Length: 196
View 1 (cartoon, helix red, strand yellow):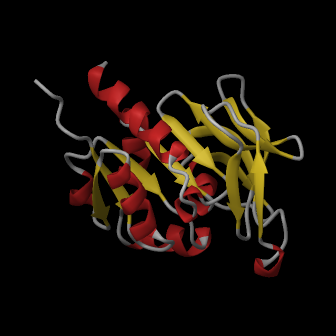
View 2 (view 1 turned 45 degrees about the vertical axis):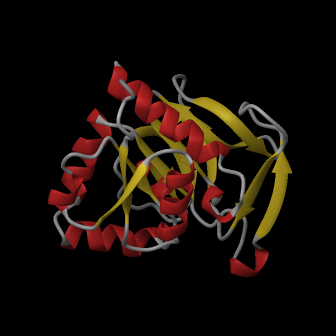
């Protein structure tokens, strides 16, 4: 019997959560928009998209979602992109701010400059296939990774895509490209977690 498709939530507060949902559909998952704590129930995994990390943080605290997300990160796969990577980090700098502390990385906010300094780069990665397209928009930079963190892609020697156990983070926007390998890697991680 074929295993049913994983239900993966997309925190639908800010960022292009519709593009994440489309990428998840292309990768064989069922996307679910999540804005309330009860919408986290029954999800096999969750994506924390980009946006403005301080604004997302305020929303999470006001909606009493912060602690629920923290618990979710301990039990199920979570993938943070751009601002989502900032939220997952163990420590946030420039300036410091509260985070979920789930992923053993130190992140520097807006490390590559303002919106006008946005860029698209192609880089080698540990994902199968050709070079990975990475879209950076007011991107954070991962300045430290813990011993359990696997670096899957880099920019100028700095990690841009990482995995640690059930967690993944990207400092770029994989949802803004036609290349769905990053989302596929997360869907595969969710499936592996469901089968374990």
